[in-house]
Length: 424
Image (cartoon, rainbow, N blue to C red; front, side):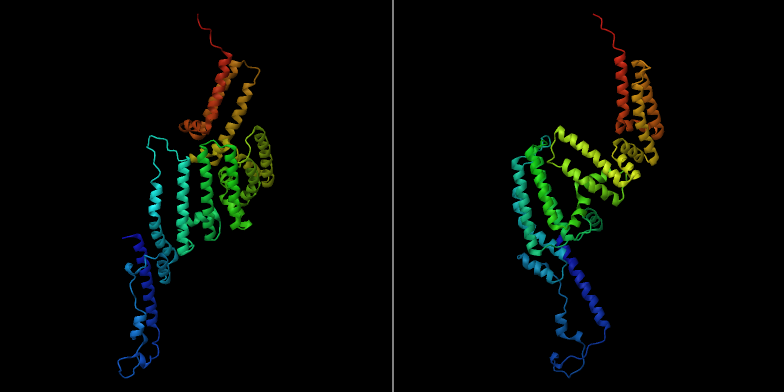
């Protein structure tokens, strides 16, 4: 059975169930007064008969099955009106009409798709050339034409979201009306496609004009968003869906900020990102030094806004070594305190390693040997925290600092003990 037929059958069954419910309610009521003799064409003496037994009533209230052959499928506007008049839910009407609209555009879509020749599995598939980009533009235009045709027939029908997807929609867009959510999704889809075209055409090498084009696209995207959202709605959208918001959620995972803390940090971080992390930001040594200075000011401003204790948590959440230590503990099912101790071992271990390297009371070779012994003691201490069997995995991840210290100690030993001259 076609899915479209199943949808219509469900709608018909629902209508029949509603009719029988009303019939049961009518039967429970007190009989109506007698009808006029004119409604009794038999010429029999006038007697009281119920309204339900009247042939006129039976004809007017007859349940007629909804047959597929009766649908005006040759005229989609008439079909849409026919279904709406019979109480078919709007989203089902849209699904039925969309089926026929897709059939109208199927040949055009096939013709365009046939123009793309997929590469063999052994070939590098490049879809960023001028021809491929032009083809994608035609497919996008065809999709827009199809959507315009569908909307003209049935209008903008609010979709019916399942609970899980509705939860995602609310988390990403907030408590916006569904119509605005659909508009936001359309805007994001269009501008993401434009950005993708530029990045694909650049093949990983963004020139100055590419950066300018990306900056212009972002500027126009923001204008379109602000045109349909109030200032308050736009800020809520930025909290949830901007690059700054997404990055902060990842970076602040260890800190576990409250909603108010997140908003405070976001409002301080957003101007920094727009100036220094946008596509149009200059990539020069001078600009990089300016960015580093601005970042130090940003960190100080956030710490001042959060207070000493939470400010310290924020600063630690930006420390890769701190995040790695706690990620190791979490992945191994160990308590938070284990992560704290791993981070302390690394921080204090690297400081002590540097102290040994500058110990003037020992010879260079002796300092190297002491450093190697100290690295081994660090390995032993870390293994005691996470288990010796997990030490290799630790070092292969963010624990590579141990190998770096070991290599530094070996270099110091080799410099202190040059190899003997080769025999002639």
